Structures are given as C-alpha cells and as structure tokens.
Length: 634
Ligand code: 7RM
Image 1 (cartoon, rainbow, N blue to C red):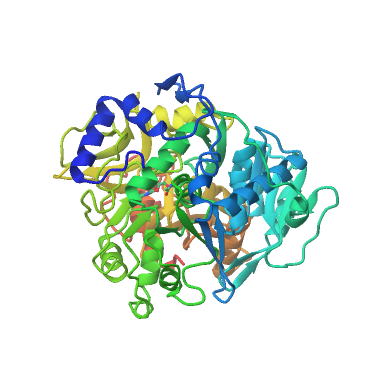
Image 2: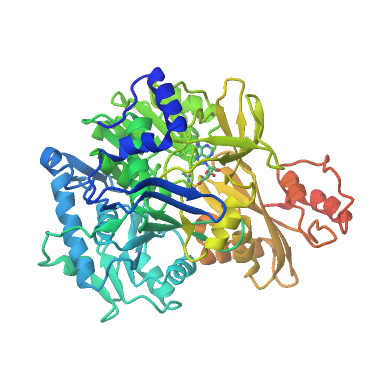
C-alpha cells in the first residue's frame, strides 16, 4: 500500500520530505491511483486571488479508483456494513461488487432522469446505504452532489437548492432517528414551494410514512432503478472539475457552498485515512458522523472506500434504544477503528460506565475524535473505559474547507497527548500568527492558526462567490489560508486547537454562525434585536446563548422563549435552537453601533466584572442591567 507510515522515524522523514519537495511527495502518492490521463503539473497556486490547481489536466473518475481498482482483489469484501436504527432489524452488508452494481445502476437512473455532468444534485437523506450510493452515482456521471443534513429545515434546504440551482433532489419518505420518525419528504415538498429549478425528486422508501407524490416530478427510487442496467462507463473528469459542494456556516448570515474538486480531494482523503487510522486490510472501520457533514463525506464514504476498507454506516443515534448502543455495535460488528465526536463521548460518559460494562470492546485498536476540542476528562474516559488503555486516540483537526485531516496523531505511530491534535500530517505546513499577522516562531506560542502551503483537498472556491472565498480565508493574513481557529503550540511543539476566533459557535461539533442564528431569531415578530454568543456547555462543548430585545406586552416570557425556539427550528433546524435565552432591555453597543460580543460572551460565561474597557459603549448602564437579570436566562 502506498506511502503508509509505519514508524515515528518514518513520519519524521516523510514530513521533512513533504516540506522540502511537496511535489515529489504528492506525486508518489498520486501515482498509486488509476488515472485515465496523468497530470501535466502537480500543483499551480497562489493564495492572493486565490487560484489553486492540483494535478493539472489529469483525467480520472473517483469511482474508478474505488471500484475498477479493487474489483479484481476485493469483489467479495464488505464495502459497507449498514446498521439500522432499530437493533431488531437485520443489518445489511454490501460487498464491493454489490456496491459497484448499485452505484452503476443508480448512475444510469440519474441519467434517465436527465442528470448530466456538472448538474447539481441535492441529497437530503437518512443514513442508509442509498445515501452513499447516491453520492457515488453522482460522482460516476460527473454530477455535483450537495448533501444537506436531513435535520435542516425546509427553509435551509430551499436556500441551498436555490444557491446552487439544483435540478434534482434525492430524499426518502421518512427517516428513523431514535424513537422518532421524521417525515422528510414533507420537508422537501415545503422547500420546493420556494424554488424553481428542481425538475425531479427521487424518493427512497424507508419508513413507509405516507407521502404525496407530485406527478411528473416525484418518482420512487425503486421505480427509478427498475429494469435499469447495472453497467455504466465512468464519466471522464478533469482533476479540477467539481466533485461536490457542501454548505457550511460562516460568520455572516448566508451559508457558504464549499467547493471540492476531483483529484486532489481523492488523493488527500485516501492518504489521510490510511495513515491516521492505520487501517489494515481485514479491519472494520466505523465513523459515527452523518453523511451530511464533511466527516461523513471524507471518512465514511470516500476515504475508506478509496482504501478498499470496510466502512460501517449507522442509521441511528448514540442513546437509542439504550446508552450502550455504540458499544453493542462495536462488539457485534467487531469494529477495529472507531471515530466519533467529543460531544457524543461526553453525552455517553454522563451515563456512567454501567452501559459500557456488558461489552468486551476487545476488537478495538484505534479511537478517533473530530469536530471540536476534546476536554481532558472526556479524553481520559474514552481512553480508559472504551479503549481500555490499549488504544491510541487520534484527535483529528480539520474543517469542511480542508477536505481532509490536517493535524492529527498517526495511530500508534506518533505520540498522543490528551486534548492535543499534536502534529501536522505530511504535506501540511501550519503557521501561527498574531493578530497583526507576524509569525510566532518556536514553541510555547499561541495565536491564529494558518496554513502557508496548499494541500490537495483544500477548498477551491465558495460556489458562485469567489470573492467571498478570498475575503473569508485569504485576506485576513496575506499569503496564508486562515482557518478561523485559535491554536497553541506547546513546549514540545504539539498543537492544541483552542476553538474559533471568529463569530462561529461550535455546537456539538456543528458550526453555527452567530449572524445566521440572530437572523432566525429576528424573524419572530416580537423580537426587535438579538445577539448570540457561545458559552461553555457540559455536553455540547458550546451552547447557544441568545440575548434578545423583545416586545413583551402580550406574551409571557416563557411562551415567548418557546416561540423563539420554534422560529429558529423552522428557519434553520432544531440544532440551532438557543440553549439559553435572556430577554434584555438593550445590547452593549459601541457608538458606531457594533455589538460588543466580547462583553456578552463574558456575561454568558457567568462573569460579573472584569469587562475591560467599556468607555466606548454608547450606554454602559445596559451592561449592569444585563448582568443583573442574567439569572433569568432559560
Ligand atoms: C471536521 C469538521 C471545523 C471546525 C474547526 C474547529 C473545530 C474540528 C477539531 C476541532 C478542536 C479538533 N469540520 N474542530 N476538529 N477543534 N479539535 N480535533 O469538524 O467544518 O464542521 O468544523 O471544528 O474549530 O475550525 S467542520
């Protein structure tokens, strides 16, 4: 297997080599793939505009690097093991051959329904094998998939459909999530009332929830594939053709359509998967993310399948029907690598170790975390009670924008340190700068995390908004990619991610823009103005704290807060509902009208003094009033 690192010395050697000669380093990895035509140049880039191209003029199809590449040797190997929400329903295994045939068949079905290369296809589906099949089928024919997490509201869905002018939506009748059945087709119907580009909706039958099918527009998945051939010749893609768009929240109201392209994403996903998790051919690997997030794209579907791995896909939630469900699945499927989020670890740790005790967990070799900083307590609980002290924890730092893991231990090879993402992977050149953009050299420094050299799976643009891409990531610090994260490099040179330094809140590993939540709150007719900040939350990592100026004349406070939450769930989705709402008489503003979030963040954390310089405030009294009524937040 290509470029798999086996020793610490090997890591150090590869890292140095990757910095001294990045092109030679990435060439050697890329050469193990199947290319219809090889590249002219490895990388062409400049960060000012920005313009980033990897493997220029090469031709490929990512699905040929999953299927045609492995069918000879792995056709009967499980590609996906799907575990249903309800433990009494049988699980499903798809071998590489079966997944290949289903992908080709659905690719043909998409074509029959008018989808062609470059068309945008929205996937709004539960965690079922068909979600992966949908992604792969799009990639097969060169259609650009954009997955919208099925917990998002009709309004969020229609915004995304409109932004990328999608012509097809793939969905299901309903989704099983724990004890709930969510009627997702109805959400799609509502969303499509405010869109004009969608011609076809393909609906998978999953829950048998009654749905209305609009003639001419809506078709059942099983009808779409009925009698359709399972043979399909992969579309020829240019390295820089778009593979997918994935929307993520930013510091302004409108989500950004992060664009990833074919070749670089493929090479980088594969390389990081192999090395970080140290996957071996017989292993069973499980990432608990949802395919609606980047982690699901890169480390449930593309990374593992490009490595010929067996990847587990779980439909349900960690605590249903009991808080030992994850551990039960690990024993049942003999999972070797387990990758989850700190918020899930904290939520399960809150039940104590009783739900863990019935399970052996002896198949586990590697544990991983992603999505937010992990606190030391959760790290130790995971290490001791799940890994039984035997399994290295890879704390993987990366972003929707980076496409693949950038900073992380290599399991069992490089050292780990609780709460540290530790060291950059080969090919990754982090740099820490102060707020003026001066590089902070050496160890024991803290500042803004930037990357100074491109890596293959980095974002290329924001869909339809290249200027915004430049502004958001490449203008804060000239010549550098700015991550939006604060970071510390300790005395040993290890990186510890400190969290966002911009107006983004990380709730249970999901990024929420404060402006986006404020806009949603302000939709309530009784809200005049609001300001949203993050605050430390024992399970979610960060919770959402909303300060709102409201007309209270005809509502009880309790009812108004309820209504605000319903409004936010309707506009964005339940994940964006504020944990705490405080009705306030005013907001701390500067004379120029800017809300001083710094002060609100302190109040939300429970501080009563040390607000620093408040002399620039329009009305310093308002701070006192907010502090006095902080106890009413609920
Ligand atoms: C993969 C993913 C990205 C943001 C990122 C960080 C935070 C992610 C870690 C982390 C500390 C980690 N993509 N983050 N991983 N913080 N340690 N290991 O989560 O686009 O949804 O979020 O998440 O703030 O900028 S994401």
